[in-house]
Length: 503
Image (cartoon, rainbow, N blue to C red; front, side, top):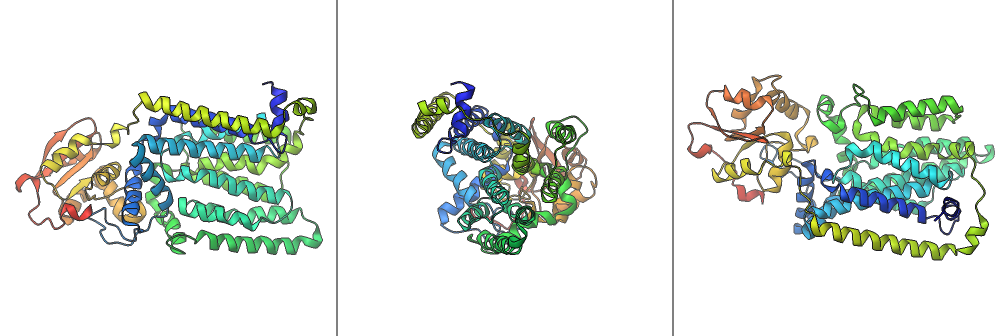
C-alpha cells in the first residue's frame, strides 16, 4: 500500500478509521509482547482482589476489610468498574487477562487519538504524535485502572476540543462518557476541570451576538457532566473519594507516581518539553489565550506529578491540532486512487484482518509464554514462612501490601494511601527508612506486631537487628522477616483478629 493511497484513505470520511485501527493494532501487539513489564506494581493485586470481592458479593465496598490497622474505616472504590474487569479477566486467563485488557485499552486510546487528530492534521503526523505519546507514557503503563480509563480521557477531551474548534457546544450525547470515566478511575476530575478553559476557547472565537448563549450552553453541559460523574454506585461520594488523594500533602512526594518530574538526568519528557518550546519559537506558533492556559496547566500537572505525564502526552497534541492543521495545510487527496477502492469495503476488510491478526497473534503468543508478576513485589517464600508460623499481625513494607491482600492476609499498610492518611504513612516511611528510627519500636508496640516483612535492602531490617526483643529468621533477595522473641512461634498472645475474618 503506497503512502499516497494511505493518505487518500485517511482523509476519506467513510474510511478514516483504517489508519487508526492499524496503528492501534500495532500498539496492542507491542504491549502484548512486552506484557510482563505491565506487571510491576503490587497495587494490581489488591485491585483484582477488590474486583473479585465485588463479583462474589454483588455489592460495593464501603469500609476497609483488608487491613488490621484501619478495619471498618470508611473507604470506597473509585475504580470499581476497572477492578471488576481486571478480576474477571484474571479469573479467566490468569495474568494474561490483565495484560491483554491493558494492551487493548492502550490500542483503543491510540486509535481514538489518531482518529481525532486526523480531522486536523495528516495521518503521518498523527501517527508520529501517537508514538511520542506512548513513549512519554511508558513509565506509567501498568495493569491498573488508569490505563483502562485512558481511551475515555482521550475521547472526552478530543470531542470537547472538536466542539470548541467548531465554535459550538458539546453534544449532550457525550455525557455517558463522563459517567463511564467516573466508574473506571478517579481521574475523571481532570475531565471536569478542563470543561471551563475549553469552553472559553469556543466562546472567544464565536460571533459576538451568540457568545452569551454559547457560554450558557457550555455551563449547562458542565453541570450535566458533573451530574454524570455522580452516576456511580457511590453517587456524589465518588467526587470526594477521587480528590482525597490530593490531601495527602508531604506523603505525595514519597510515592513514585505522585513525585514531581526529575530532570537530574535527561529523559523523554524533558526532551518533549524542550522540543515543544523550540518548535513554538522556530515556527512562530500563535495560540489563543485558552489554548495557552490548557498547555500550561497540563505542563504544570506533569511537572508536579509524574503520573500526569501521560495526560500531557495525549492531550497537548489535541489542544494544538487545529493550529498545527492551519500551519501545515493538508495535501489534496489522490482522488483517482480513492475511486478504485470503495472506502467502506476497504475499511471493513481492513478491520476484519486486523482483528483476525490480533486474535491469532494473541493465541499463538499465549500458547508458549506465561505472564508472571515481577518477583520484587511478590515475597512468596517469606510469606509462606509467616503463614506456617501462624502469624497474625505483620508489619509489612508498603510495596508488599498488595501481595499480602491477594493471599488473604490482613496488612499493616498498602497502596491505598488515602485510607491510612498522611500522618500514618509518613510515620511508617520515616520509621522504616531510618529517618526517625525511634518511631519503629513505638509502631511495633502500638499495633501489637508479631512479625515484620520488610524489603531486603531497606534500612528497616538493620534497625530491627539492633532492636531488643526482635530476631531475624529469614532473608532472601526480596524480603527480610523478623519475629518478636518471647512468644510462641512469633504469635502475639493477645492477637485479636482471626485470619478467616478477612476472606
